[in-house]
Length: 136
Image 1 (tube, helix red, strand yellow):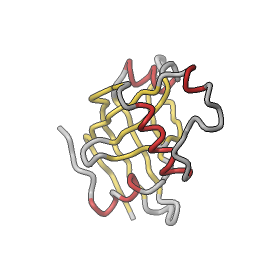
Image 2 (cartoon, helix red, strand yellow):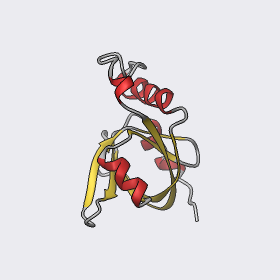
Image 3 (tube, rainbow, N blue to C red):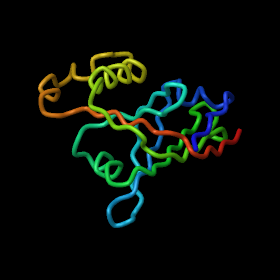
């Protein structure tokens, strides 16, 4: 069952705060990656390229955890446990460009290496929160 992100902590998903995405490797070992994210009011959206470890892990096992720590106050944080409920390539490039603008101020993710756009397929993972812990 989906749970709401508390209003008091929503800024941790709306501001350009790097979050840690935890997935599970095939051998059961947790794998954690710092990522950009967005929030659509229901889902936490993560964008990655096909073939990366987090892509493989979320495709095989949809259970994930996201940890956001407020860069202005490390004692204020939010843990979101959830599951990937939708995976889509549609809008993947537009989403990574949106995230690039949010986090770097440059809304052309592929500006540094335009050829990268032809070498990878961008994927959006829509994560439904099922449990939220927060403090601070």
